[in-house]
Image (cartoon, rainbow, N blue to C red):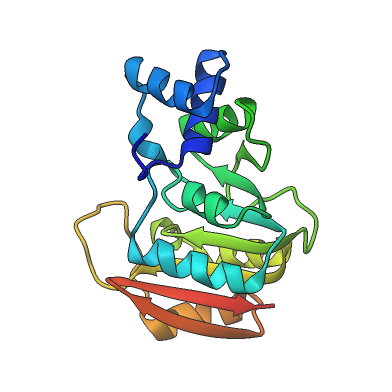
Length: 208
């Protein structure tokens, strides 16, 4: 099977989606045969994803909240490369939440998702070791409100990434300079912020 695919997670998706069982290789082939969107489970080599996973490995989180997971560009590679972390995910689009929960249902217990807004979370203070919000804040009209809530539920760190230059995505309504991003996390409650730059993106790690 193509080594670009995250086989364990992709196979779990097929099991959960079709309600069948078999080896990982059999499930992968069945997914292709059924015309499922298996490309969603390819390993991400995006520089921002690689950098964020590297930073997370240094933090050794056991529990993580991923905000605005989307189709899992960061999530699936992160779960494969950091096999000791359990991830809760939130998104505001129901089919993205269902995608994640299908993987869980198919036998991958370290992940689950909830349909909810980032600015109104049900988790208790400091519930997660780390909160990640990658390619999320630029979509928000009031990012500070969300950042305060994310920092509230984060026990140790918050990790965010945003575009560093204008693009043609009409859903991107914020553009943060490095200073803007640092100030946002500090205003939200971070004690210190470490900034990183990768191709066309800024990454900020806030220590709480």
